Image (cartoon, rainbow, N blue to C red; front, side, top):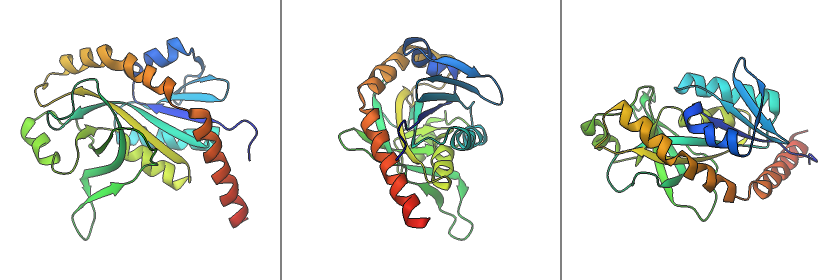
Length: 221
């Protein structure tokens, strides 16, 4: 097992990540191809918005940093009113409605790594923002949250056999159809996500992930 296993955090925007960067604090160590920040063995990478950006940033993090686990953190919209603004949920299943399977026509489904003791939710990832209340209602039958990156992070982590833990806070509900409202809500609630993240026993999670990776490596070497 690695002596100093690496933990990586993937977030879409500086808007969401600002409390992490300023309060931990994290030092910027790269600007291109992605903004990359670090403190000790914790790295944070800003992917940009959308599935392609998220996939590329996660692959870059996996190849360059060789993390034992990745946390995907950020904002998500709620598909109905049972997910209040600012509440934080642990994502346990991710749907891609805009990328249906070829034969069945059903959405691709991804399963991130799961921790016990957190409020959970299903997530739908789309390449465009889901702001229309009617569209949210359709998605709500399968997922309580929507974002634009999550599915790609999980998929990339699976390829590299890296555990992916996903937490999202609610930045908008069906009542919020204006970009300005969403931005203001992210500013209002992003610090709560940072404070929540501090309480997670990341060292234990990373050690366990490193141990599992070492076992897998020995089995297949």
